[in-house]
Amino acid sequence: MADRERKITEDITIEGMSSEGKGFAKINGKVVFTEFAVPGDVVDLEIRRSKKSFAEAVITQLKSPSVLRTQPVCSHFTVCGGCKWQHIQYAEQLRFKRQIVEDAFTRIGKVAFPPIPEVVGCKDNYYYRNKMEFTFTDRRWITDAEVAAGTEFEHRNGLGFHVPGNFWGVLDVEHCYLQADPSNKIRLAVKEFALKNGYTFFNLQKQFGMLRNLMVRNTSISELLVLVSFFEKDEEKIEKLMQFLSITFPEITSLQYVYNPKKNDTIYDLEPVVYKGNDHIVEQLGNYRFKVGPKSFFQTNSVQTKVLYDITKEFAGLNQEDTVYDLYTGVGSIGIYVSDSCKKVTGIEQVEAAIEDAKQNAALNHVTNCSFYAGDVRMVLKEDFIAANGRPDVVITDPPRAGMHEDVVKTLLQLAAPKIVYVSCNPATQARDLQLLDEKYEVKRVQPVDMFPQTTHIENVVRLELK
Ligand SMILES: C[S@@+](CC[C@H](N)C(=O)[O-])C[C@H]1O[C@@H](n2cnc3c(N)ncnc32)[C@H](O)[C@@H]1O
Image (cartoon, rainbow, N blue to C red; front, top):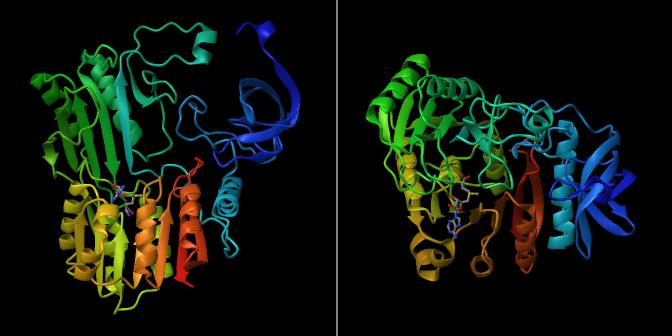
C-alpha cells in the first residue's frame, strides 16, 4: 500500500489484553486488536483489517512503552511465531494468563467458581521445551530488516521454523531460546556440515533436495534423541552425516534417521532407522519413567508436567479403593502417575500407537493396575464398557484444545462420578464444557499452570464435585 493511502491513528493507549494475547484499544467505539501491543503502551496504529464489530491493526510507532514491557531476548522476535509474549515481563504474562481463565469462566462458562489463584509459573521460562522440529529450506525467509538493509545472499539455504501465516516461508534460526543445549549446537553444526559438504536443502514447492527435517528431543535425565529426515536416499551422504553427528555429539543416546519421500513432513507412517543407541529416550516424572520415541506424544515441558500432574493428583484426592478413569490418556502418563494412590485406572485414547506406548510405560514401571483402551472416548465410554471396567469414583479428563464432545459430557452427566478433574489447554472450551456439566457439578477448585512461558497458552486444572 502506498504511504499516502495508509491510515495511521496516532497516540492510542492500549487498554487491555485479549484472550488471544493481543493488546486492544477502542477507536471511535470499535475494539481494535494489535499484536505485540501491551496494556499501557501509547502507540500509533495502522488498521489492516476492519470488520463490523472489531478491527485489527499493526503498531507503526511505539510512542511510549508500557511499564509491563521487557526487552525480548530473541533476535527472531516478531518474525518467528514461537514466543510472542517475550516483550512482556514474566510476572505480567502470568497475570494476563490468569485473567484469560477468569474471563473465559465468566463470559463463556457463566458458572459459579471459587477465586482463581495465581498461575503456577515456570522456574525456567526459557529453554523449557523437550522437543523441537526444524525444517530445511533452500528458500529461506528474507526478513523486512534484511530487505531494508539490501542484504545480498550467496545462497538461501536455511534450517529453522515455518514463518506464521506463510506456508512456504522458513526462517533460518540462529539461536532458539526454547530448548537447552546442545539443541542449538546440533542444529547449527548440521547446517554447517551440510553447506560445507554440498548437501541440498529441501525445496517444499518443487519437492526436491536431500535434507528435510531435524528433530531434537531431550529429557530431564539427560537423554537425547536426534532424528534427521531425508527426502532423497543417498546412502553415502546419510552415512557421512550420521557419522559426523555421532562423533561430534557423543551425548546423543538415540541417533536416528528416516527416509521421507512423501509430500508431507509427517513421519508417523514411516519406520525410522536407529543409527546409534536406543530407539527411544526415557523421561522421568517423579517415581515414573516414560519411553519417548521419535513418534511418541509427550508433554513438551517435562519440569512443568510434573507440577501439572501433582496438582491433578491432589485435586483427584484419591484413596486406595478408588476406580479412576483417565480420559484422553495419551501415553498413559496421568493414569500411571496417579496409579499408586488408587485401586485401578482405566485409560482411553484414540491414537492406537499412544495406547501401545501407554501399555509399555505401565510395564516399564511395573504398574499392574492400569488398563488402556484405544478408541474415541465418545464411542468407547458406553454402558457395557463401564460395566466391564467398573463405575469410576474419579474421572480425570484431559481433552485436546477442542474440549470434550457434547455426547461425552452427556455421558459424564449420566455416569455421575463423585469427582471430575478437568485438565485443559484451552480455557474457552473448558468453560463451555463446565457450563454443560453445571447441571450436576460444582466447580470446587481451579488452578492454572503455565506450561509455555513467552506464549499466550495456559493449562488449567479444575476439580468438580457432584452437587
Ligand atoms: C491434551 S492431550 C492429553 C494427553 C495426556 N493426558 C497427557 O497428559 O500427556 C489430548 C489427547 O487426547 C487424544 N484425543 C483427541 N481426541 C480424542 C478422542 N475423541 N478420543 C480419545 N482420545 C482423543 C489425543 O490424541 C491426545 O493424546
